Length: 594
Image 1 (cartoon, one colour):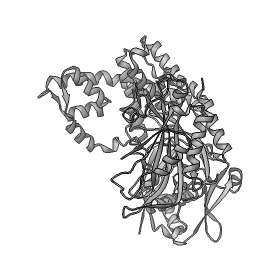
Image 2: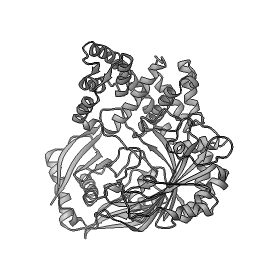
Image 3: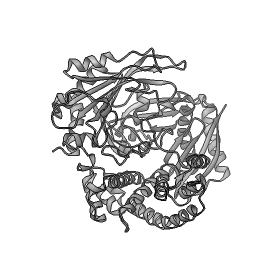
Image 4: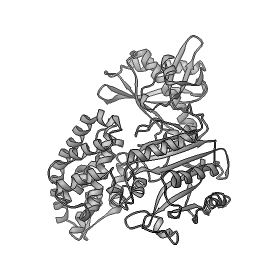
């Protein structure tokens, strides 16, 4: 039996011995990437370095990263899919490539984890009609063969990563599968490996992404100047495999939660697997989102959180769980992940918010059921109108799935086209984190976002000058169109203060100030006066960006980028809105013009 902590330790130590530096487990809320709501993979915080920026820790990196993916939410309920999961990863930023990456993967699996070679199968890129000039990845296949792997499959139309946007880094990947039944496989059955779930023989446990190419604006794939390796191994799946469990939810990271659900519901897991898995999964993900100081709401991160909690409550209702239970299960999650100090630190907030949301939803649930019963009295053509289904969803917090299941019980159906039309009108409420596969900020580290990111540094410096040195950054969200910047300050800004801050930023832009980057230890950075409030994510070395004018320092911050090299590249800065973000936090929205 291997524990979660032992698996993580083995992985980190193995790659440290191979010259990798351990980097911190970053927050679930990305700091410089507006393309997704949550950190969806270990590579997410490393985007600037995959594009060529030098990482303070070097070219070989390793870590375990907490992640949230909501694109797979409908898959949750089987044996292997999860909304929250931990990802083990190792990276080469222009250092080693295919051969060494594959050899290290093989060594870790067969020597460190002692998985029999006969139990492993590999898939490699088999070509794709969408990029005919890119050959099959025979090179990876031959490396695996030389290591003694017999079960190798070329997948056409699969085993390719990226680019995240229309252009950028991309390349083939090679996936590693484990044969779960007793004994050794006779063949690598792709039908059984393509989607790992209950009863499937092959389970994917690791993926090496080989960023070999760069797609240009003409659609051509050319050999990349900096070839990168990005790997991902799911802790939950690997833990189940190593402990010979076909069901992830029987491992130590789930069992205490499942046992508590059994006790509360007075029902057995074996008879209610799907319901109990969804409840356990959604509440674990909710705890980790709440730990980032996110509250349930009707927009962005809070909307995803609300959806997860309410979906868990809906499924709990089917198990006849009537009393408040979310707080009880949340405490189990906090116990399981005792090594995440921020869970314990924010425990009071987590328990208070989750219980509050449950109470609120239980009240609307009864009203929603009354409305549903009224709707079905006037139904036409055995179809619930999309408008009514959306009203249940929007006003009563009914997930669409719940309305569909209630309708099915009455031998009715839901007008999905009408529902989607209504939802499209309220699109800002339903922005989700990811579409299953990682869509990263590689897509949006454009010239426009780079300029606005740099402008955020100038804005912070200006606000501290106008309002006082109590002002600190509390968050930012940058798209190609605008900058959104949250900062600590109690009072609404006057028009005079807004104008003054705007003027200071534009004066610094006009001066054409140089922006310098240097690598320092965290201690050196703090001693130099650099600002930075996310200390827990920093490693041994950090990047410090300084905006200098001839007389003194305008801005000095610890940051991962991206930035322009001179302020004159920014154009004209304009604040378009100032408002409250939360208690003690103000928000500014700003743009750059020509």
